[in-house]
View 1 (cartoon, rainbow, N blue to C red):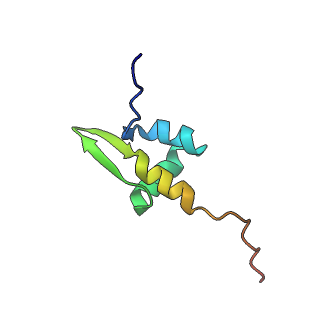
View 2: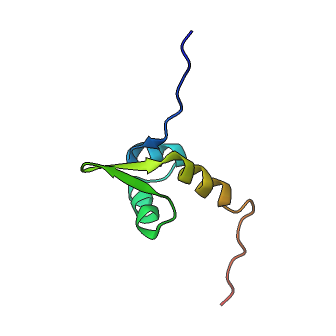
Length: 68
């Protein structure tokens, strides 16, 4: 029986799929520093740990609408 190794890094496309967001939104989050990445040569790898932290930090209730 072989043990499954949990990934430490995934591609931005995989991060988008994991969070059910667009690839462009992932790049916005990366550029804002909301999730972390590293480079392996020219390939960008997104930290699974930071994706989990981002998801855990999302609000559990819908924000109130702003009044004008």
